[in-house]
Amino acid sequence: MKSLFMINCKEASKLASEQLDHPIGFRRKVLLVLHLKMCDACNYFGKQIKGLKDLLSSSNKSTQPLTLNTSQNLSEEKKISLQEKIKQELR
Image 1: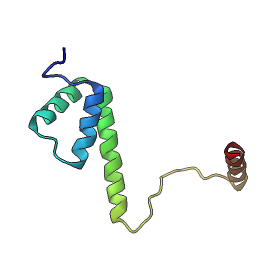
Image 2: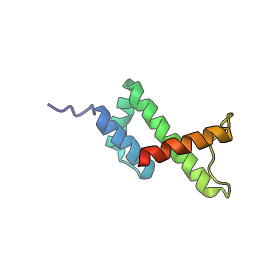
Image 3: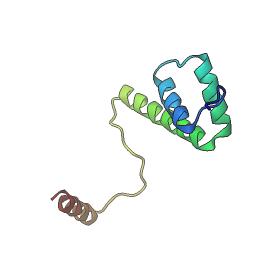
Image 4: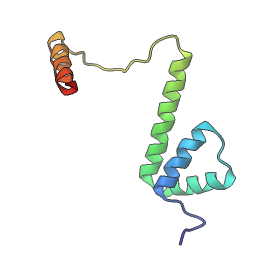
């Protein structure tokens, strides 16, 4: 029997995604908040998708292309090696 006061992780992840695009309504929001208070995995998922949306929306407003902050650059030799591996996988 399905509980009126609980949702599962699949439903919570769907609601978390939906609420980023449009309001989800009071009842559904309460169900989501209750679930997120008890489920660390869904809480983390919600934060991750919100962060991704924020990152993408801020990059759309910027004239700069979206880049990853990396402290390590590939050498030309490593780039060529990776390109060869990709070509082999695509054959």
